[in-house]
Length: 213
Image 1 (cartoon, one colour):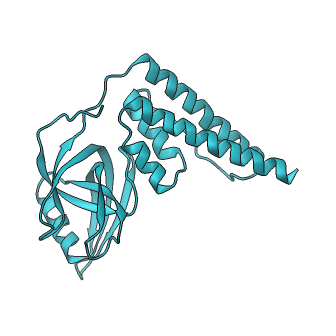
Image 2 (image 1 turned 180 degrees about the vertical axis):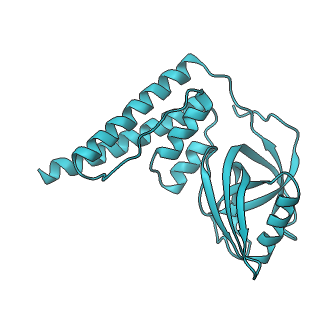
Image 3 (image 1 turned 90 degrees about the horizontal axis):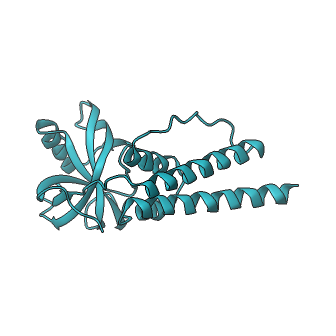
């Protein structure tokens, strides 16, 4: 069961058509006036804002349907243009749960709780070892079948929570699969979803290799 680690706080929110994992990098091109105002507020405070997936609708104009589990992001760098637009690079910090959506004026806002991080257990470490091995198997097969040109060498994190998000960020997934991983009730479920996705990718790649022979 997901538990919160804090009291609800008001946070500027950026609904997107994509998922941001903790540890992930989020480049943004900000052009709508409401998000220019959001950026101003974020830079004046702690540089943090929330990111949630738009499950239905559009990123432009408002009125979309948003998910309740998201990620707290931190603005690492930004560059403004003369017309007010901005290029932003943010990074995912931790998960959040939306308690209540507030008025979208002047920009989307919500009361959110930061979700607690579970203590690591032996089962988690075993799941991480299995998923890492499957990831390495996938890279090896893709390279052998010449489906992958080059893959940067991965320096795997030692800490369990960071390692699980590192795997999430490195595993190719459709957006809804990514959201399922982000919203998983516990770390073990998250890692099992990642392993299942890696298994599917391996099977698909193996099948393509067999068909070409």
